[in-house]
Length: 103
Image (cartoon, rainbow, N blue to C red; front, side, top):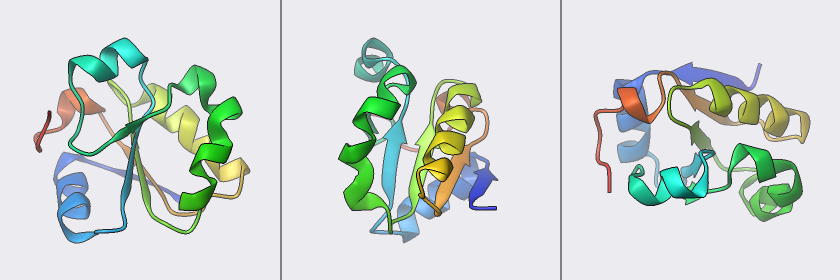
C-alpha cells in the first residue's frame, strides 16, 4: 500500500528531513487561511478531482496530506492513490494534533 498513516512527530521529522516533500492541505480555503502547516498548498477535498493535474508534477515526490482531524485527508489519499500517486502520507489527527510549525 502506498499510503502511510503517520502521527505528528513522524510528520515533523518528514518535514524537517525531506526537502522534496509536498505538503497538501485539503481543508476548505477559509480554514487554510486561518492557519496552516508551514509551506503547505491548499486544494480542498471537494475540488481535488478537478485540480489533480495541478499535482501531476509532484507525482514522484512524497506528499504529506492533512486536514482538520484526518478524515478528509484519508479520503484525499485514497483518491490520489487511484490517480497513480504512490508516496502518500496521511497526517493522523490532522492539524489539530500537529505540534510542529504552523503559520
